[in-house]
Image (cartoon, rainbow, N blue to C red):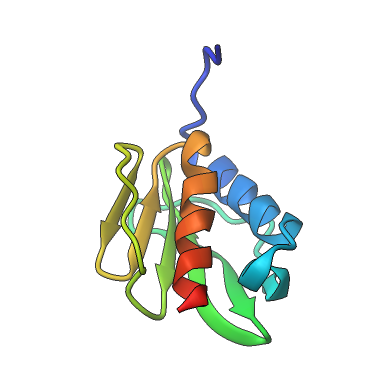
Amino acid sequence: MVKDRITDGRRIGQLLASELTGLQRGPLADVSVVDADRDVEPTPDGAFAYRVTADDTEVGVVEVTPETARLVLNEKPATVPARDDITIDGATIVVHSGAAVKAAVDVLEETLSG
């Protein structure tokens, strides 16, 4: 059992980037992380961390706060996971922990699948 929960927004954003670029299934095979700011400092309003593209078309951006990473999509997500460590507000998926990264990627995958 994991004792420490990752709740650092910058680290969650890094985990999200790794997951987005590491999966080669379905529509995620064409996803890239571009224009990454490796020295991003989280802000309460959300600091730009990187853009997310699929087939060289921007599908969203990731912003980091001190406690979260936010995947701001260009369209409303196709699904809403039943989890308490992810919230969705319009087209924004707010990831509250490192453990929620995989679920956020699943939401993006379903959204890209149309």
